[in-house]
Image (cartoon, rainbow, N blue to C red; front, side, top):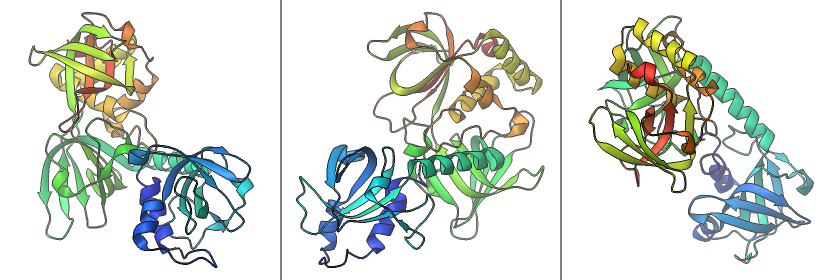
Length: 367
């Protein structure tokens, strides 16, 4: 997730940290090229194996020498002021590390000059605390309008009304952190830095910040925005071997084939749960079509991911995301022709049409 991802947290620390005593300062370009960041997958005698992500994906074995400076920092820290020394034996599988190789280290067999680590337990605790804060102070909905303010970074984002409640007004300032979901993922960990210009009507948005009791206005500290497709459909065919799901979009009556990734969430509502949700939507006066869209939006909010602000829909709208999380998981092979489904699918910019969340057993919601 953005706050605890290594590039966003530890890179500034390493840039500001001096080279180990006795070593010559490397040229900035060489230092930048030699950085190693990722997750510890193995700890050996005098070595640590780090799995790198992104364009440098793969495992690299790094030597830990007596000259290596090892530091432990807490999630959320932006400098090494409060970092504590640690021993090689303190490293464990699952820790997040950022390593600057020692001066002159062989790229194929690097030795660490500086290793900065965040312990797995600290990260998990920080994730839990942040998820809890999103639950307490977070809201979510569909963007209705974006009205620029008078100062830099200021705007009012209006979310469409839900369940008869008034529209939510999200106020941003220059200090508000704005991120945008990847086009084929609702995982908070995959979101990247963005600006107000990236927020558009129809987007699905989550915000966290201060809000007076009962007030529809939120002073946003963080905003996460994305553009996804909410589809109500019936299943045409399922191909577990190819991870493909063919459906007929009920709104357009046209066929669509969606790819399912390993992280795609598939759930089936038990009949009593589907009836309960349908009753809530009918009681709110949303109608069948609006109910379908709202439920699909809830499913997007419930997609788990590292550090994801799960369950952030307004409490006044009912904890639909929580209900969906308790629904049983199913496999692609269990979906049969004619089954009614609600799907959150990838938005513009995705490399291929991808199903992010698939919910079956939704016949009562579509009636």
